[in-house]
Amino acid sequence: MDTQVLDCSAAGIAKAAEIVRAGGLVAFPTETVYGLGANALSAQAVARIFEAKGRPRFDPIIVHVAGPKEAEPLWAEVPPLARALMARFWPGPLTLVLPKSGLIPEIVTAGLPTVAVRMPDHPMALALIREAGCPIAAPSANRFGRPSPTHHDHVLDYLAGRIEAVLACGPTPVGIESTVVSLVETPPRVLRPGGTPLEALREVVGELRVDPPRVSQGAAPAPGTLPRHYVPQIPLFLLEPGPPEGREKLPRRRCGILAFRGEWHDFGRVEVLSQSGDLREAAANFFAALHELDRAGLSAIVAEPVPEEGLGVAIMDRLRRAASGRARLDDEFVWIVR
Ligand code: TXA
Ligand code: MG
Image 1 (cartoon, rainbow, N blue to C red):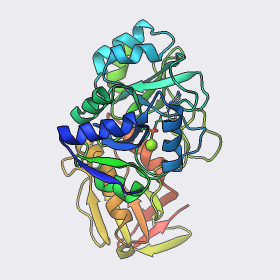
Image 2 (spheres, helix red, strand yellow):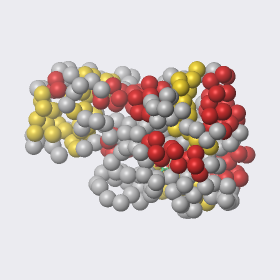
Image 3 (tube, rainbow, N blue to C red):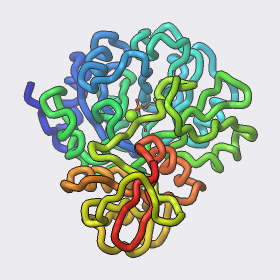
Image 4 (spheres, rainbow, N blue to C red):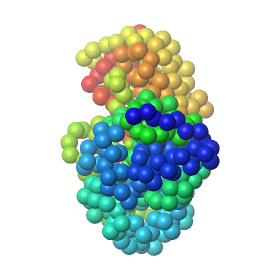
């Protein structure tokens, strides 16, 4: 199949909407990352998302709507807290999980009794949903387990030939996926930290349950929170302090550094997320920097931790799950600790 590259224009939206209505797949920008969209009310269309992504059927998909009014019929019940969260954070990177209504096919939710819904804060995404005339089911538009796409070029790298079209709208502004919150439990539980900071959520929710970062392998407590995810093609190691020692060492020149800020020397490639130490800027640059390092012909990536506040919580969540171990540095070498 030839993947059409559609202009970021009214004509592009019209064509994309036509494809969605006909049961096809269109990748489109949201404020977080590009989504791989299909008509959420069509089980057949959604089945094609799983095929194109190579996504296991047990991992449920977020449904994208144009506003709270469109969200409500998709849920069996809408508690006051959901209304308050929608009023405060929509449109924006917050996904709410509640018991589903009968409108949503089982395949969207991987058989779960709940459905995750969000209203993206991107004019092209909203125009597409409105013009298609249906809610749009969309996971991130990467191959399963790989880093998310924050530019249409990333989408084409992953999915050219597997989907009908991509709306080519350049980089996405937030750069990290939505925060996913389950309102099925009391207090509400954060299933995935993301573009809406936990500090902001707490202002509305009060108490919030957040599971500690998971590093070990094993069964996920909730679908999609798999410990290994966002994995680049070359190994990524989280930088830790400590004397240079380890089971193996690589010359710095063979490695790339994914740095939060600062000056770095002797690495094969340096990507600095935010020279001024701004976590929003760091999130916006995060996946593009990871893609660059992954494609630079290096042996490994060393990632510097970022402060775990604001969007830094979401960045560290992605880094921990991308990492296959830890590394220490001396002037010449990267030491792989484990
Ligand atoms: O920002 C985003 O959320 C992007 C853009 C495209 O909207 N989408 C995205 O989708 O990141 P995906 O499929 O890559 O991640 C969705 C996450 C997964 O961890 C999935 O398991 C979880 O949401 N999820 C979806 N439905 C759920 C449900 N009913 N219960 C629990 N978790 C759910
Ligand atoms: Mg994803």
